Image (cartoon, one colour):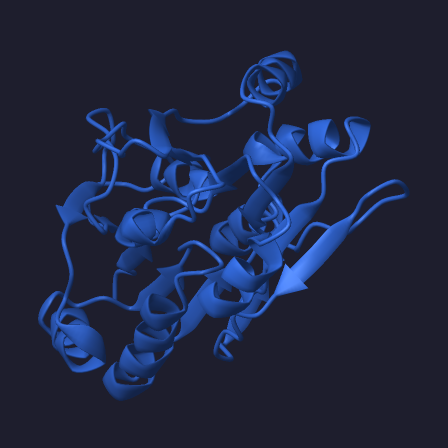
Length: 239
């Protein structure tokens, strides 16, 4: 039987995997960001309808291997993937970046959820959010003494106490320094994505003695094989 892969994308490395896949394979995107136009594999955009819907797709499309290369914080998608693979009776592999580790000079403060984050933010005035679009749901909750800067993939409206910057990594340390200084950032809010492309913000926070509120990583499901690097996953695919 000819192998057929469904690759669930979401991190930068997923596109690198997709570029190695031939036309019988499928690269699935959630619909956020730009859709690549130069791939040999098929590209699918949109959801599947939960674990059961994904399992049905796996069977109907003749998928023999599911690869979860979604963001470390896309916990629901990862749970659906692991469950769907079990239902469909195929293996599920996952690419999971190692988390960043605090270094000497870092002031990292892990927070459990949004409520804990807002409590930890109370002493600060000029936070920089790098959580994606999630904070947009809370613009009407910004205290009068704070001004928020949000960075997301696409620029969108903020309000009188929040500006939203549209920007895509990789980010360069000189630009991050300029951003922190221009906007007088006194606290950074980040997920622990483990991405090299977005790591310079942590270096600048360390240089400028800016605290970092780190949203705790979710617990992800067990899978058949887990890889910590693109190289390891690519090697496994070759064999």
